[in-house]
Structure formats: structure tokens, C-alpha cells
Length: 313
Ligand code: SF4
Ligand code: SF4
Image (cartoon, rainbow, N blue to C red):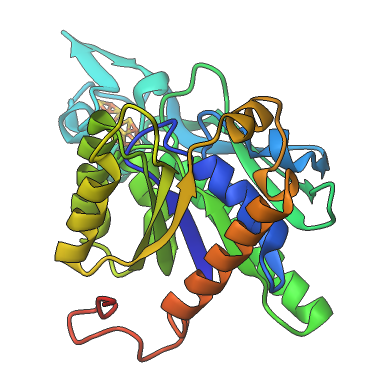
């Protein structure tokens, strides 16, 4: 089963939840850090990593003398990565999205192909022995979905290799990019089930509703975790999230309490599941509820006629 841990905003607690779930998950699993713009799951899992593998995008890098400056490549490019100044064609490979359109339409095949490094993927093992994989965007690179797709494909390969070696395909527990823009949706589309981590503050709630709008459109089973529940000074915040979930049939799988000790431990890079028996039990119970709520969601036939998972009640 491929499980995404997501949120409508950064700082809601998805990495915190993903890290501790990776620790206590009762089935074989692979921890995936898909927050490729700012991967930080490694801080908590302390993996030993193999050498990172760079990943590139094919981009137009130059023009041969066959170019007639017809402008067809410029006209098809939706990202302004090609411009024409009089009889001169200018390429901006840093703005290219790698769609291949310019190569396809050039009547003279005058474009030469180069590559732009998007970032890298690294595999390893967490300190507690669980397989781990992460992606990291190259500093200065703005486009992440192709790297994310590569990362998720590698995670799938790892899962299949582990299945061959151990007889059971591991679950993927994927720490998603924050928000609801292209990177988060790319990661969510790869999943079969998704946990939305809600920050119950007014600002967090607003972004949680955006996450619902985005992720409820996808063929996913969804659940919610309320993080920092019962936070002082946030009266009514938890109930606002609960009511929202009730109205939409979105199960609240756990409420993780706001505790100063937990915040301190997290700031020190410690796994909450390891700081006390009570916190470990919270994550074990969350894992059990997820397995119950998401049961069979990796099986054919779980989707309804519209290609969506039946809503949970
Ligand atoms: S489509 Fe080909 S020939 Fe036309 S301007 Fe572009 S590179 Fe030159
Ligand atoms: S590959 Fe696509 S995005 Fe890149 S320059 Fe060509 S048309 Fe533009």
C-alpha cells in the first residue's frame, strides 16, 4: 500500500507523523521523503545513504545551422523557454519543462538535446533498519515534479526488490511536499491512501480546507490526523476540524496532543514515537486505525464506478 502523509501547509506536522509511523508501522515498509524541495525526514530517521543518483531533464541546448528561425519551436513552448529576436532564436534551458514539444515540431530537426540536473535520489536504511529513500532538488532548480516521479518510481522498484527478497511487498510511507501545488499533488497522485495532517489553528484550518479541496478530487482513501490538539489559546480549533471532517465523512484517525516536551524533543530531531510509552502507543494506535481505514485500498475493486475510493464513514 502506498500511503501519503500530507498537509495543506508547511509546519502542520506531516514529517513528524511520517517519521514516527515509519518507526512503529507493524508491517514491512519503506520510508520515503518526497518533500524534495526541503527533505528533512533524514533528521529523524538518521539513515545511512548510498551515493546519490543525479536525475536530469532533457532540454534543448543548442541549434544547428539547419535552423531557419521559423519560430515553430517558440510558438509551441508554453513556458517561454524559447524566444525569437528577428532572425535569431534564443534558448532558455533553465525555463524548460522538458515536454519535448519543440523537438517534435521542428521541421529541420535543428535543436540539439542537452540535460539539466534536477536533483538526486538517494537510497539507504534508517538507523532502526527500515529501508529509506529520499529525493533532493538541486539548489536553484524550481521544477520538482519530474524528480518526484523519478523518486516514486525508484521507491516502487525498491518495494518490488524487497518483495522478491522477503516475500511481501512493503508499504510505502511517504512524507509529501507541503501545500497543494504541483509537487504535493504529484506525490498524492502516486498514493492509494492519504493522511491529511491538520494544524487546528485558524491559519492551519484554512489551509487544511484547501488540502481537502485538492486531495478529495483524487482516487484516494483519505483520513485526518489533528496535530497539536488542545493547544492553549486555540479554543474551538480542534472542534472546527472535527466538524469539518464529520460533515465530509473524513475519519479523524488520531488527535496528537500539544505538549511542550514533545515540541522540545521534535526540535532536537528525536522521534516522538521514542520519547515515551504514551507517545509510542499513540502512533501504534494511529497505524492500526490507518490499516483498518485503508484496508483493501491497494486491491483491485476498491474503487467505485467513478474511479474513486468509497468515502469512509
Ligand atoms: S522550429 Fe527548428 S527551424 Fe524553426 S526556429 Fe525552431 S529550431 Fe529553428
Ligand atoms: S521541451 Fe517543451 S518546455 Fe522545453 S523548451 Fe521545448 S517546448 Fe519549451
